[in-house]
Length: 413
Image (tube, rainbow, N blue to C red; front, side, top):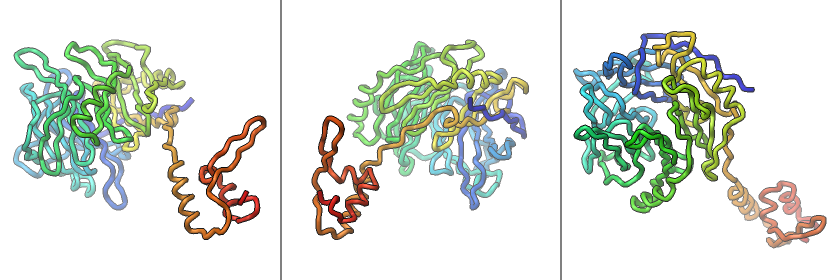
């Protein structure tokens, strides 16, 4: 059985029992590359309700939290929670929405430039409010966001209007290059969910709750390459696949053609049969619970895990929380690295038959052969025979391709 990497203590200033903050993984940008680092922004104290506006960084090599200061404005970064933060072009954190210190839902966009802090090792960052125009979205919190090709997508979320909870069912789009909010398109009504980018470029909304606070049990897809109308229609047609609905802690990510979900125990609800590691084959929409799920769940039960940060490739996850043998109120005080490959999550590589055929045709054009044809070849078995075009065989079987290139008698039959 694969063993879970040993949980490691994170040093530096204590971030306490901070909830509803955002954690973002930022790759190294210096030469030589610096260590991967995680940036934590905002959130509020679990018990005192103090709302934070600080930005903290931990290098995954050194494992030492350090606060970052802004050098842009006299005031500090705005305090907020229930917001979204997405990394753009490896150097800018794009923050949208959330709640302010008074609990009001926000609809502003903050751009935090990490270049000096991350590449140069400085502890100062520059930030500003983005100047936006177009059709601005309504203020919201507990939404989900993702970036594809310089476009920020904001899905769902909720707000309180006259004492009632309003859950949004739209997908808002902001062109980060021009600052224009485009007309929102219908998508899926949910909050506290995740918006993931699939390998084929589609957006996938996973998990979350409806207005009645019931866990949702379907996936919703959106294809940005289609027109807004066609994409909305396709999203409505695809949102019918059963998923893992429970009140436990769900961490989800995309690894190749797999949707990977780690379900950990929730302190408030106790143990669940869904606790463990799951993956869905997205082309076939089939769930699989991995054989090591029970053992992995038992290992993770030694602590409570509140945040998850996946790598860009999706093969490694870092869980932040509190280990059982340390201070249980340090929600960002312990980190454990999870290698999905070691736990049986292996994406199916895309078929390369098209590339093989292209390479084979190029080789044929380079050769000036005088004999042979590009016709079919008989494949004979014990009882039946069938015909296969020789370029198919040559592209998949190097020995056959070499035989054709030899111009021998056998190659012309």
